[in-house]
Structure formats: C-alpha cells, structure tokens
Image 1 (cartoon, helix red, strand yellow):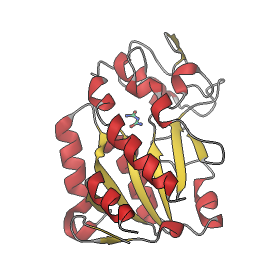
Image 2: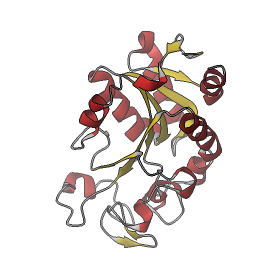
Image 3: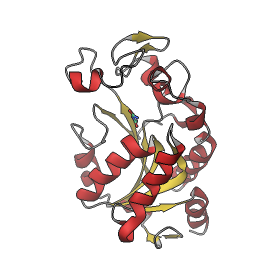
Image 4: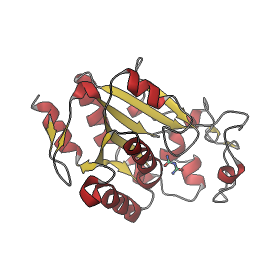
Length: 221
Ligand code: C5J
C-alpha cells in the first residue's frame, strides 16, 4: 500500500507495519493529571481523539499490529531519576497522589490509556520510564519477533515522547510515518516545528501525512 505523505510517498505492507500509539493516557489528556499539573491546557490534546479512534478502528479491521505505550514508573520510583522527578517544578511531582491516583505510576487510574483508545486483548502495551519507547522496554524484541519493519505513529506529545520514539526507531532501522492530525502538543508551535524537523532533509527522521491519507490507502486495499 502507498500513502500520500511528505516529503514523498510512504510505501508499506500492513503485515510488516505496527501502529504505535504514544502515551494517550489520562495523566496527559484529562484534567487533574500530570499534564495539567505542569500548567498545560489538556483540551488541545483531547481534540485528536476522534481522528486517532478512526485510524485505530481501521487498522484493527485490517488486522494490523497495534502497540500502545504509557509513560509509567514503578511504585518505588526506582526507575525515575531525580533529574526527571524534580524537573519543571510541577504542582504534582511523579509519584505524588493526585485526583487520579499517584502521578505517572504504573497501574494507577491516571496512568490508564483513555477509554476511547484502550488496548484490546492481544495488543502490545508497553510501560516506559523514559520519553522514548525503546529505552528500558522490551519493544525492540517484540517488534523483531513479529517481523515489523515500519511504524505508523500517533499520540502525545509530538515534540517530546512521539519525536523521541521516532528518532530511536529511525536509529534502529524502522521507516516511520507520523499522522499529523493524530498527534498533539500543549504548544502548537512545537508540534508544527517537530513535524517540519521529522520530514526535513528527505525524511531525515520519517514521513508525515494526514490520517485521511492512511484511511484512503487502507480503503483501497
Ligand atoms: C511528556 C510525553 N510530555 N508523553 N511526555 O512529558 O510526551
């Protein structure tokens, strides 16, 4: 299949491609979570949910592999260095108790992926302690076992965990496509800049496309 993408068409085989949904968890997307405690307007992130849901539904109907990630730390915080915990001087630090349980701690209510995009039985769900989904996780091995060579990305935030994971993936030899209307930042100008950076210099990190282009390619299959 081929997607009308920038800077040029993205060819993919669905059996060798995973849809990777980064950190669409309550802590970032819903009021009362970590994102809001850092002073951000979370409604910006909520706006991408319908488009992301449409892609996820179509991808599942085509039998494609789905990978969900959560930024999540161990309850004892052994995987959360002080340099991360103290950064940004948030009202609620990682591990503190907030309205949705302990912030960014695995298993807590706020750490769950929002209901609209919740993982189904059999889909991969990765808890990651860092910004990138390959750092200190089994993601690389899980993708290799399944013969995956290409990755389609959605999720939040564009310039932080999405871009970091795309760069990690690119260094590991994956072709990466970012769906422009299925990713968001608390800072619209950072999203725009990240998209430009990713596809600059002949797709130095990867390709970008609107979700409609992916849905069109899937529909023509
Ligand atoms: C952040 C993320 N922004 N998922 N995490 O701290 O992008």
